Each structure stands twice: as C-alpha cells, then as structure tokens.
Length: 443
Image 1 (cartoon, rainbow, N blue to C red):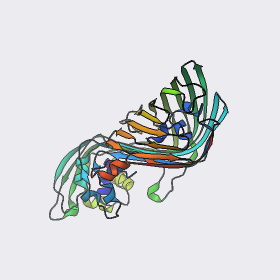
Image 2 (image 1 turned 60 degrees about the vertical axis):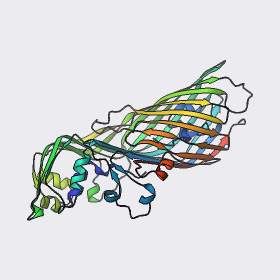
Image 3 (image 1 turned 180 degrees about the vertical axis):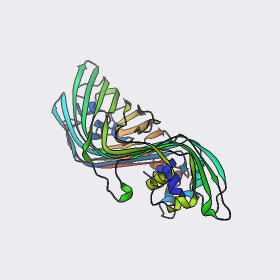
Image 4 (image 1 turned 120 degrees about the horizontal axis):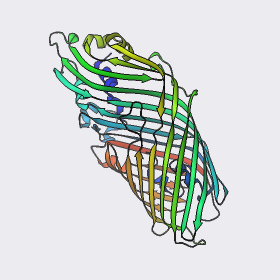
C-alpha cells in the first residue's frame, strides 16, 4: 500500500471533484418540482396544473487547493499533480454535492392547494481543515522526498449518501390587494446509503528519510484520529440503501409577492418576490456503522505502509485503538435558502438567491453544503427561459454559468463560462433534466 493512499485517508486529498444545484433554473417560475426542492411553497400557485419530472440530475464540486484548465483536463492526458495550479495551505477545503431526482410530480388540486410527490437520491462529501502542505509532501515519490515535519491540525471530513421519498403540500395564506403570501411543507422518509467520516485532533507528522534504504524511512506522528465507515468496501461489500437504517426530514418555506399587475394580465402578477426556506431538518440513523478512535502517537516505516493490505489493517496493526462504538447518527445538511426576484417586464428578471449551511463544518460526521450567493439575469416565457448565473461559491470563488429551459428539457451549468475561459477553475457544476409539463390555462 502506497504512502499516498495512507495520507489521503488521513487528510482527505481525494476531495477534489470534477463535477447547490440547478443554478438559474431553480428560480424560474417554470422550475416546477425542482423549485419545490428548495422551497416547498413553490408548489402552490404554480405555472403548472401538473409537472411530471421523468429524471433530473445536478452535480456540484469545489475546492480551494487545485485549479485546473477544464478543456485540457478533458483530453485524457491531464496530470493533476503536474498540470494543475496548487494552493497548498494548512486548512484547505472542498465539497461535492450530487442530486438525482427520479419520477416525481406536482399537482394543482385547487387554486389555493397543491401537492407534490418525489423520489430522490443524494450524496454530499465535505472536507475542511485539510493540510495541503502535508498532502504535497506525502504525494512525492519516496526517492524525491526530503525529511519534513508538518502539523496536520484538525482535519474533518464526511461523506453521506441516502435516498428519500418526499411529499409536499402548499397553500395560499394571504391574497389581499397587492400582497400575496403562500407557505409549504415537505415531509421526507429517508433510507440510509453510505456514511463515512474522518476527524483528527492535534495531528502532526514528521518524516525522517533513510537515503540508504528508503523502505526504512520513518514517519513519526502524534494526535488522535476518529474514523467510521458504514459498509466494508475494502472487502468488496457493495453499497446499498438500508431501510432498517432510516430517518425523517422536513422542509419549510414561505413566499411573499408584491403584486401590481392586474388579475387578467398576461404573465406573472408580481413585481417583486421574496422567499425563504429551511430545508433538510432531520437526521439518519446508521445502525451498522462502526466508529474507531486511534491514538496516533508512534512510529511506522515506509515498509509498514507498503505491506499493509488496507487502511483499516494498517491502523489496527500500528496504532492503539482507544475506543470503538456501533451505530451513529448523521445529520442532514440543514440549510437556509433566500430568494429575491424582480420582475422587470414579464420577460426579463433579476434574481438574487443565497444558500447558507446551518451545520458547523467542523462537526464530527456533520453533513453540510457549501455556502453560495447567486445573481441571475433571466429571460423567461412559457416555452423558453435562458439564465446567466453569477455565483460566489464558498471554497472556489466567483463562477459564471449559463443554462436554458426549452419545453420539457432543461440543461445548464453554474460554471460553464468560467470553466471555458479559466486556467484556474476550482469548481464545476452541471445539471440536466426531462419533464412533461402540463400548463395552467393561462400564461
């Protein structure tokens, strides 16, 4: 087993991702069920009598360690260690968010009552306080390495995936003169997939190179490390969703509209819209997960690392296990979403949306999203919309994307423009979907 694998597992250098969701599109008045995922009040007073989604997918990843030229990376000969720009710090960070929506629909029961049902699979990986300087050292070939001593600090990483079946309900709360308010709630049944985490405390690593016999080079470490995995992937066990390890989740949302347009006008009645929601209130119970805590104070050689069959065997053979426990709870990535939409002339809109994590990224097994602020000019009609989102994303900085909706199809990326023209892209996003829209009898 290579030393790179060991320290990747120690400090999470795997967090860089080539692919939080539906930038631009989710703010469209024709977003349908994809808008409900961020604010359940969007289900009522919709542009659709029913929105049937066949499939949609969104993937977002960002980090502050590696920057790449995306076009060069797509040619198949891209070497991350050689070709990427690097920003090694003592506290590098990264996040990956994957969201797949299966068969789902909304239904307008009456003008003031609507429901939605959806099926969804999600995966979130988050890493903080990763020592990029240590990653740089341990990724070097043993022959090119030099002796070093680096304090690793307190790295924290978690990956969590699950399936959910959700039911949403929305109703109009106020429709008086120029003021309109609607609210919604979503209840979700959750089935656990894979959960794993790593949390270090006061870690430091010193490397003493043996120039005569590199295999006898020594690593001295201090600190403690807590690890957990919900399935035995090292022995070939495949990840599966486990109904016995379940949980529940709740989303709550409200929307206010200031309406100056008449009831018979074509287009949206509001001049200004403000919305807020809190999503993913809840947790998952992993019954089969095992958490181990190791005292890392000790010494190992390069040969010890090379001889180990897997990371877990390496820890068990070379460090003292101070505690072990079965079954843990994993929180959902609870987040606050705000949205402000200005209707300029019924076809052109300016939108400002924000996503803020309500979970501390330093929490052990704490699933979080990356904070983001997105400004989106939008052209919107019944059959077609076009978006140009500009996003400030935590970890990766400012990104520019584009996307469109054409009847039943929507495609976009929150980073496409930036990725095409930058040699230092630190984030990527893409989304695509197919739906069968059944419109209201008005525009």
